[in-house]
Amino acid sequence: MSLLVVGSVALDSVKTPFGQVEEALGGSATYFSVAASYFSEVNLVAVVGSDFPDEHLELLRERSVDLEGLQRVEGKSFRWRGEYGYDLNEARTLETQLNVFQSFKPVIPEKYRDAKYVFLANIDPDLQRDVLDQVRNPDLVACDTMNFWIEGKPDSLKETLKRVDILVINESEVRELAKEANIVKAAKTILSWGPNTLIIKRGEYGALRFSNHEIFSAPGFPLELVYDPTGAGDSFAGGFMGYLANVKELSEVHIRRAIIFGSTMASFNVEDFSLNRLKELTLPEIEKRFRAFKGLAHFEDL
Ligand code: AMP
Image (cartoon, rainbow, N blue to C red; front, side):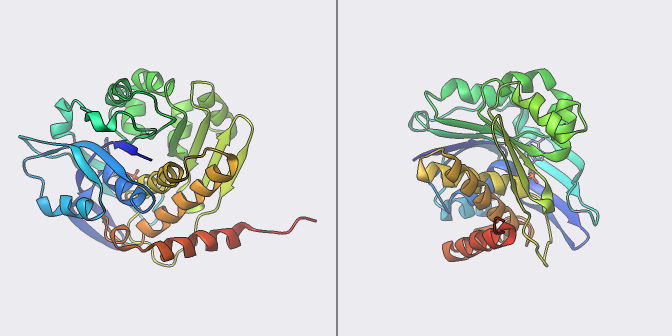
């Protein structure tokens, strides 16, 4: 079943205590697509500039990501520069150059418009709604955002949320968006704005899912090697949506499995810089770690 993602395809410069990369392949839609590609066909809509290295796109092609919706326009590509301290849960954004994103108008190719699963990755909330206007009748719309938009375009973001089923954001973004320090109260507030489900990404501590009826907690996978958390959130979303698009069911059992597949993909992603770990995974490796998650949190009833 088709899965559509709209977001950034970027050149990232990232420094962590364990190394650094300059102008490496990054972007919210990139991480999402590669993670989701292990589960489902993926259709990508984004923009890059004339300076974007073709070898970066080759990686997406190798993962069979459909690039008909990727526009290449005259100008410089989107660039993000960030760094992390020893607390890898919080990125410090040093620079965001929107460049070709400033005048980007997402055009959804006709063959993508019947997508049943739609992920609005982290981009301008105005653009996220432009996308929804072009998709005919999706079964599930999920979206991400970040402090850049929560602070920069709060009203537009709230308009987008009215049209979204699942919001997937970081813990600090939940607090900032709801203007509420308590995470349970903040979740209630956000759910009253439109989404029926809120997934809170908590970095190395895992993920929490709130709906009007259920709370589900997924642990973080204890890793010995963590090099670069960039893209962990998008890899989570890719595993989550990719799994759901593949099973085509939104029951509680599948939503919970999807959260664990999301956590699995995020845990692999942080083991190397850029897409280096994600691009070379195998399905048996993914399933092995999925099962290891079960062992981590399982206990017997009294
Ligand atoms: P995360 O999964 O939250 O670590 O996402 C990191 C990715 O988001 C990086 O690869 C960046 O290129 C991308 N990114 C950072 N800021 C923005 C922004 N304002 N709009 C779109 N994408 C962004």
